Length: 367
Image (tube, rainbow, N blue to C red; front, side, top):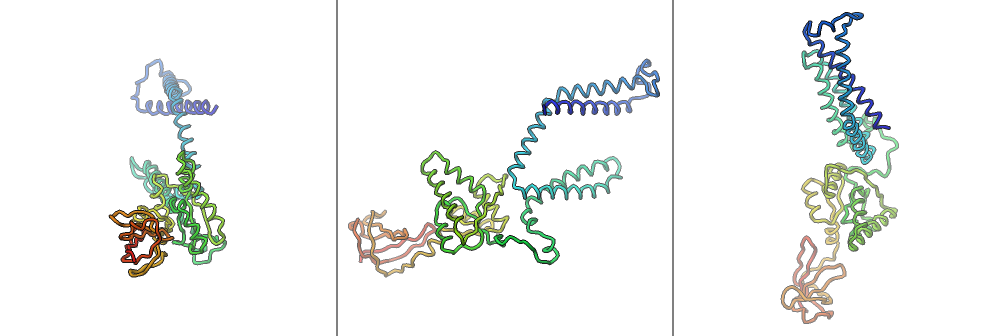
């Protein structure tokens, strides 16, 4: 039914276009161009003029009828595409875009009115300005939507804001969780200890990635994804932690890490992660990163050369004669000549400590 209605509308509009085209062509014809039999007067209008209009209208309607299936299909596909895009966008993005578009069109019309008296091109300048400024206003408003949402009339004139959300964090107090730190699980223990302040922000695209991992056909990935969802559920139940879901999705960015960096730049938040590569990329782009691995290394007990330790040798080392042991926190201890004590608990003497990006290594020798 809708397709038939669209086809009728397109045919009628094409017929009107044919009449207007015939009128333009008729004005350009020289005097006496029509045949003599068609120049018989009829209420002030010649028969040739009426026939000319009818032919133009019929040709326009015929052309519109032939092209209407393709045009109606194009209109239908465009409307479905636009509806899909709008449904995916958060409401604040849509409202900000409409506000920016309206402001751009108003400015374009005010400026365009001054160019109308210009000969030849004056009447086309407002159309050009409407397209350019409308598109500019739309983009600027969407990119600045966070700042627009923070504006209020009392704040603009120096007054106090009322009804402000108590859970809203000031700039820099948002902690953005990435997928790796959620799956890792240690963030839940850190939240329980009370060392995390501000608001924990979980982006919607991170939730989608977690769900995709949890639905994976690979058993290991599926277990990791489900563990991440369980960790999020545990964090949300913590009374001393505020967790918010952010539904912003940057369609022009494909990678999740790049979206995290963009979100951090937008809200001036800090990214919580244990991904070394994301750590470096975010720092290069001016986004503060809180790395869980660095925190874990920082709180490990300090071991100094010369200290004695009791360790259990569990496997061979890379070099000949070496044995490897581990502390309770996972720190590796390489024991010279410890291979012959494989499986034994022995006393060792610390010789040196090596701090790397991956963690801390302790070198020791038999006491």
